Image (cartoon, rainbow, N blue to C red):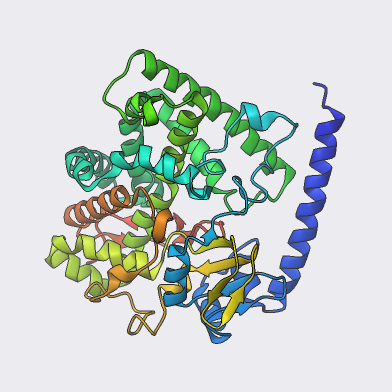
Length: 435
């Protein structure tokens, strides 16, 4: 196979920039800098002491590398709601195309995150959210509840028959995958492919670190573009009652959506509705297993499953840090963020702000203000799928502990090696351990 000189040049340039960035970040992290320890290539096993060190520097502090950082709940909430703070200075976030291996590929392929609601500002964001929003209303979630419950029960039936299983691979990971594939009416034969795609893309959400990762992402995006493009065309010809058919039937302003927009929306719903929910289900279950007193509360009252989800989202938000860019000068507390300035919002720190949450490092299902967490962001970028994530997580916990009240850890949970998406990767459990 011939490899173009352009591709070699792109690989070399990407590798040089990546190496320089990693060297600087690593050096600052090794020096004890809490911001770089949180934002570095590999997050610490326990980032919460680092957030407290960031908080001690002030409600908003300026880092030597130029960005501003906050772990303050009030500042974070206000910043996320402020229209002057966008998700990027342009339509695509900086570095969004670092998976390309040849010029022009951005017109042929798509990235389900880099062109999605998650990284767009108005008016593009407003238009796409208006199209996808009706799919996730409270009424839609109520209608979806029996289907999600059926998925949870089926998966639990398979796992519960074993003496020991992996809580993530055999339970938490399968629930959002099966739910999204059902919503998309994806054939059973293609579902394992979605798991592979989700794993590759999730592992590089922090950025692409090596040329090998870059090529893996490009390969996945090519496969996704082809698959979803064909799926969209099929549902246009033969519509059903699935999400893709409903998106294909949408005609905002009297015009149907173009093929690329449909593919991007479908890809975003698939990926964004998968990885973070895996971490919410798996992480919440681990938190309950590690806090027997709180697990006992849930066993006594299964209706506390919803409270357990909310407290876990406060205690260990799956997305730890959100970035915003000032579209114009913005005052944040006593600090002035200049136009173009970047703000790192430490959600993990804001959710444990002692000014808002009493004894914030305690996992407590009875906490009265647990729903004040920022795990789903706020403002116009509040998570579109928050209702579905809550529904899946609540039903997963309710049925898991009702079916297996003696569920216990069979070893130490292993965190996923991703900086910003925090959650367990491997969790061995005993189906019938000691209560």
